[in-house]
Image 1 (tube, rainbow, N blue to C red):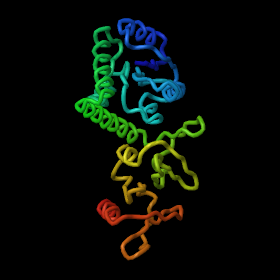
Image 2: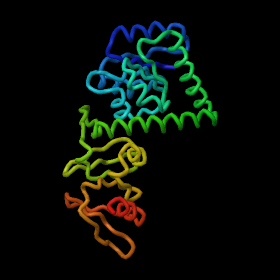
Image 3: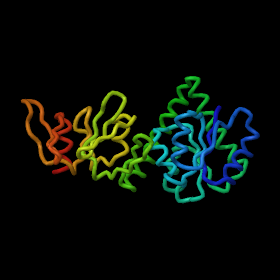
Image 4: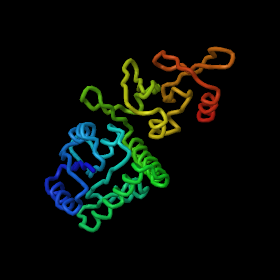
Length: 254
């Protein structure tokens, strides 16, 4: 299994390298010191396992997961126990609270190896575990998104922090989503269902199988046919609304 060590502290990376010596089946594929470099290396190396620091220059570990869409094979490392209490109570993935011992390190690695190998072998129980891990990671990211009130988007190597209040609607297109903000739009490799889980359901509503609407951008509805309606947005854009989507919006707006 290939391993990526992402931490801005040389001493922390050195400790992980030292602890990895007792794991002959794990090979260090790369190391990174900054958030953006970590994003680049995750996409280039596709490591099986990542030791990911929470606090890094340029962006946090959670930001990195959001940008890359990574939802598996991650062991967080952090010196801040509040993260352990607030985020990792969900048991989304294992975490190592600095300073950690060889024994604690080995426990986390053993857990990661078991999940990765059994999932690769097609073990049903392991797949359930992996699905649960992905779901819990999504909860962690949703909490982080709500707290920061912005969504990270990488476009041509530049990371944009887009305020949630600037997002009019999000549209599904094949394997991508298109995030619309006024006259600008950004494409992101993510499913509409995943981004929906990451956003506050009281503020962003699935109004159609292919559209997620920001309620702050809504001005009203107009009937487009006998059985369908369109949502009229402040930008002048109109998007289709299903019957169930219309009922969801009505229930929220009273």
